[in-house]
Length: 359
Image (cartoon, rainbow, N blue to C red; front, side, top):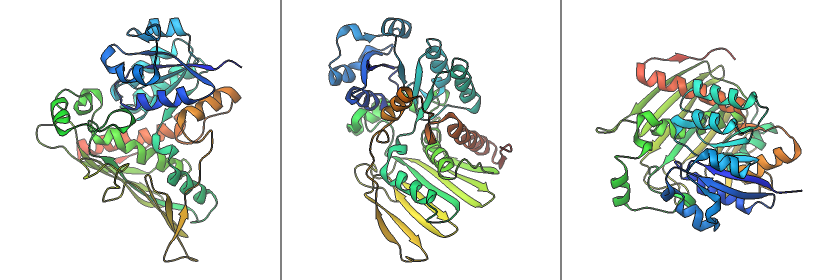
């Protein structure tokens, strides 16, 4: 069986390098092209993957027409997710787009329509989906270890989106300060801000953990420092029939959680009717509290096996086997997360609680 042909289009988000590395390492994939209007943004990927000149493009049409890929990995600015999904979908190729889903629910629906009309796959990559602690937490919930999940409490963030590049390579404070005024991450028109960057993690994975339940209404507040167009911190309260859940985002944590866990800890506190789970990002174990163990017990994280170690493995398995996507990757779960985000944005702007439509 021939390997699946993979291209990477638009390098605005630094996760493109990570995703292409996963594709290059997959025995069933071949990276046949990369494309961005700016050659400079592709230099690291060219060096890492040792790509020949004929696989490097600055025109997406030429890239897609020349390479005829099976899968396109997209990493554009958030505000351009719908535009680039529509552009690439015209070539009847499966699409994996880096989180967040979109800048708005209307854009998310454009993306869904673009691929559904052609019968193609659309996957949204939320990197925390492949976190052993959170997948272990989901397994325990599905096994009924804490009863019905009532509340989700999420804290997510890092020092800021400019402090690291692909593969989590660190940058200096001087580099961050120089780029901040022009970076799309800090521009409202491009979908910048910590809320759009990180709320989707809590809202989407929270929806997955809640088995697809949506909240009744949402109340949110943001902090936008002087001189910035976008927020660097947000707090969102989602009211479910089972109680209140909270999703907090932060650019400007004291440390990055993948080097030294932050305080508050990045991750999830999950409250069920018969117990609780503390699932921290990058942890080796999760904390389970039940009637049998009221003081809590450490549960070692599951060792993930293919195709559940990364998004490329999962998407390739679906394409090869014809299986349906599941969990946060699916437009259905991600769309509910987007509903929560849209309501949070409206609430933060209006200062009022925003109701969600009945599902």
